[in-house]
Image 1 (tube, helix red, strand yellow):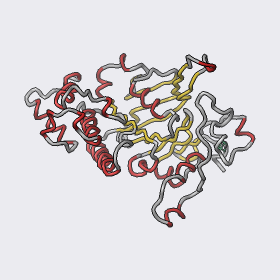
Image 2 (cartoon, protein in one colour):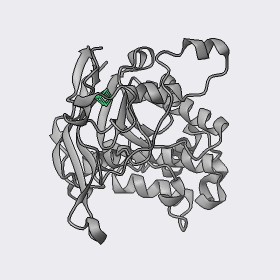
Image 3 (tube, helix red, strand yellow):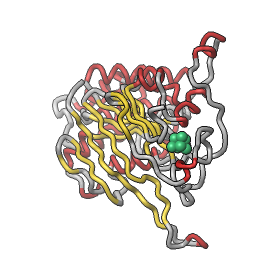
Image 4 (spheres, helix red, strand yellow):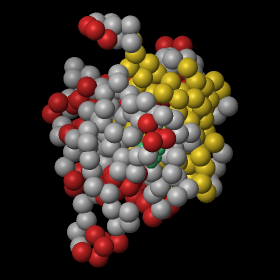
Length: 324
Ligand code: SF4
């Protein structure tokens, strides 16, 4: 595996509450997370709604300005918001959103959408600009005649492929993917996942892949991090993550993945039934934030917030009982 390309340390993002009886308090959407991504690596960032995974993506890409913490990309500080980022950084780190319909201008055709990205980054092939666009379409399996179509005339999967083509048009080193397949049919999902894997292999791309679908990570991620109420509960290389999960929350999520045979069901380790709902990020429980849902919770878990500990190389767990 290559060098560390993105290094995040102690990242926090708090949102002030401006109204009601909670006025003056903060939603701690991200509360001190650390992770890194190497060249050619995929970090799968997984969690339920409200866990902070999308907020993490928006901080990395510069849509939010972090409350605290450090982010470096290729050795450069990128803690500033997008408006203050240099052009090379915007070119080198791209993003694909969950709903491409909201990021593809409906009043521009595909030729205009792809051309704009290339023009901004001064990457137009002046000798053959149309050929350059057709090659981008072909790369993601869209036919040449789509060049003059508008995004709304495309299907959801085709729009996402167009968004991926636009992201790749600037030849980035890293792409942040925020639930890129969650609103698509399973067959289209598989096509897009295979395409992302192919591009990663060809271009040594790094991915930060945000998802609530843990099962997707088995074939896609190099390592997986689980977020819960703004903190990372467990991070591990993908094989260790699925075969030796140590945090009770990870075990609960893995137990919820559907299986198709009795053998697979029997092979599930540490089966843990799902219980309870994720608490409000405004009212995070004292001690371990998972204590309201954890069947192993002991007295200490209601007093002390566990720290992240490395239990084997690259496998870190935030739980008082991680060694047990
Ligand atoms: Fe459960 Fe305690 Fe571990 Fe939290 S610290 S996950 S409550 S055992």
